[in-house]
Image (cartoon, rainbow, N blue to C red; front, side):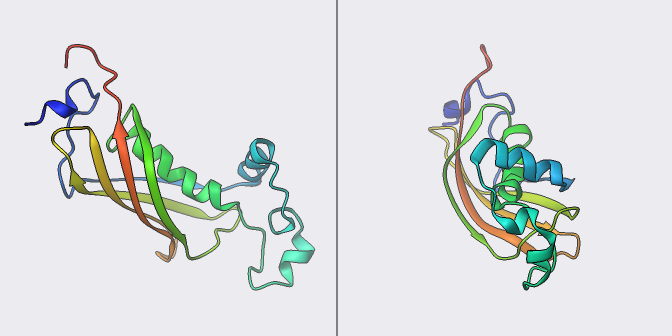
Length: 147
């Protein structure tokens, strides 16, 4: 029975289905995240301090990095109306300001009775190094009438 996905914009995804989204980070991202959260950690703003660390340069907040996964899930797979129920992410590598990253999701489990998916998630940098990896469970709201 697949009626649990009735009314969802993209319909029921399939196991193994994938989607991704890419963007280049900027100081504007750092500033917007600070405005939302109040996170003013010097590793995001003070070039002199951070130059003396293993980071070697300014980095974006982890929420900026993982936020790209929000966009993939809400816009592409499973798609509009989707929210996270649970995330389990390991932040493995900092992302520098000005670095291009790609968020990737893959459907690893789909329920028929409810619009719930389990996704394999990761964010990689331009070298292909994993910056974030883990899993997420999503729920997709039925926002389309008559489907």
